[in-house]
Length: 341
Image 1 (cartoon, one colour):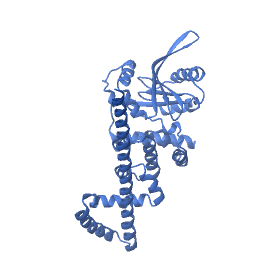
Image 2 (cartoon, one colour):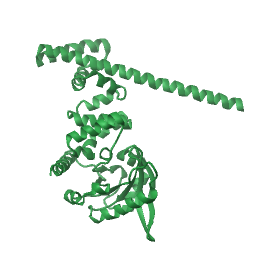
Image 3 (tube, rainbow, N blue to C red):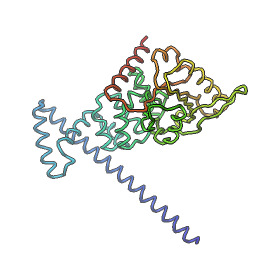
Image 4 (tube, rainbow, N blue to C red):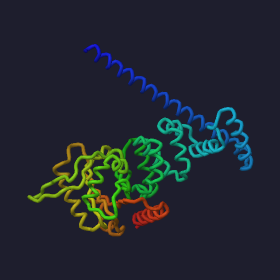
């Protein structure tokens, strides 16, 4: 019996070595292919630049893809050659490319090529590296306009760049990179009429998808967390811990529009958590009030950031993308104008 256990352990170790080796081979092959695609794109771009003509560029790409596809397959189709050219144009520094292809696959890179805003592109790259998104998740994040929904997009461009640089070089993340507005909770499957309890129950039932929408670093701690203050009982709807922020996160669920009184209630919860639940090495707790709607001026006048409180809307049905873009653009403009004032 003892011999059989030892054999099984040995088999387990060998399987682990094989699987790890496969992963390393896949990473190496992907990095090599991505670098090849960058070099091809750069070579074509340099050639086109020397002849100073868009017409020549179209001719050379048409000639190349036919010859290369015939010899090496569909990886060198006209569409892919143009992607390689865009890749090289977007990232002209080879050192940056070497760092990028260690963590992102060619399929990831294809997903970011259409993003023309360099700051937005950098956001997606760094968040993908941080949370190790699959290609599917990466595309979903871009499609759901995660950047525009994240608090950092409402900051001045220099502030965004500095925060992304700190994330890149020091793995240091701040709440503006974590919290979003609005949150998409369409996966909860709620009907037109539901209560706060229904909302909370649906979140617990779909906790994995809830955390996926919120971010991988959220760890669930409690539902209806009971706290007692001066012989009076209160309940925090949901309590999480964010690993990288090293903070407790109290979430209060509200069905209607945000009201000023919600601030005082959340402040009470945060002060209690700070006094009785925080442990050494943690940062101050953060409050998140999820509402069906909010007034931007209302939120501005309450100066909630000074209290470590975030306000966000939640959507139980996905809106039309054009309407969402318009709404997020207005929110960004409002926030930036507020900072100027």
